[in-house]
Amino acid sequence: MELQAFNRACRRFKPHILMTLAQIGYTILYFITEASFNRGMNPHVYVTYRHIVSGFAMLPFAYFLERKLRPKMTLALFMEIFVLSLLGISLTLNLYFASLRCTSPVLLASMVNSIPSLTFVLAIMLRLGHFNVKSFQGSAKVIGTLVCLAGVTTMTLYKGTTIRKSWGVLIQMPQNKISENWLKGSVLTVISCITWSIWYIMQAITLQKYPAQLSLTTWMSFIGAAQSAVFTLFVEHKASAWIIKFDIDLWSTLYGGIICSGIIIYIQLWCTKEKGPVFVTMFNPVSTILVTLLAYFVFGEKLFIGSIIGGVIVIIGLYLVLWEKESDEDGMKPQTQNKNDQKKETSTEEP
Image (cartoon, rainbow, N blue to C red):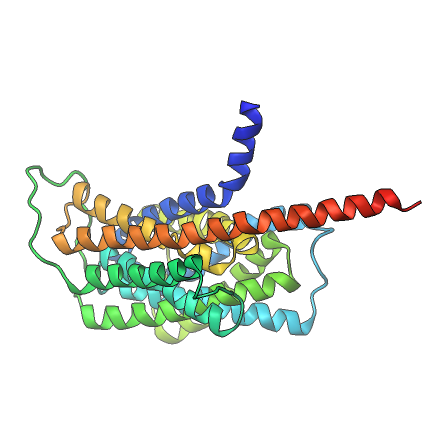
């Protein structure tokens, strides 16, 4: 009985565990890419190489494991995946990592938390999500989304006093060769968050027509890499920018391609299919908290009281939204079970 209960708990919380692991993976990405960019690697070249690596890493799994599941590729479906790759990879990530050169991982991780609110609003506008605002659960979702947005705003706009520490830097990051431009970086981050939200919504639509998550991840990687390469050729004219040495540049590219653009994107697609796009984006605050803690305790970046207050507010909002979704699913189970019981009774009466 205990083993069965454990298995049921694992199945129920599998999406939660996977999304938490995904956010841990993204947390590592922030710092390894910042170190690479600070050494002079072009972020647009990084995005291109990263998704070439991702495409080749996922290709054998997609080909052999989804041969029977993969739908036939049509021109209309290819164009839809082309737009999906543009929104989620080439456009979003080029803007996103370009902003990292102008700001810091803490600001980026904080701004990304606006994605759940944007995704929730877009999902309601496109009628991909439903809730009854008059019900207690519906009100909890709205309040939780607004609380998350309030927490993000607090972390972004309010710094407060600096929290002192009595130890030195445990890991010394390379010095930034790019001059900080927080206004430019913030604008780029906001635009990338908007396109990122649209990408999450579009994922749910595309998965209905193309339910092969591994194959979709592979297609997006190759198409996004090609789009990013074309863009990079327009903005970067030095051939030396395409040369990657056997150092942090190579490791950040391999990590970003295999782990983040490969395994984590597959996890997100699976969770989007199972739980919806809003659920997936609601785990972004986990990465924000981890990035803030690592930046302070390990890499020696300043931590302000506003970041702590905003982080607590974000956690409260995240809990409200996830609680609402769990309550909604629990309410649906008895109805589904009754329908299944009725079908069984009907089947036993038939000759």
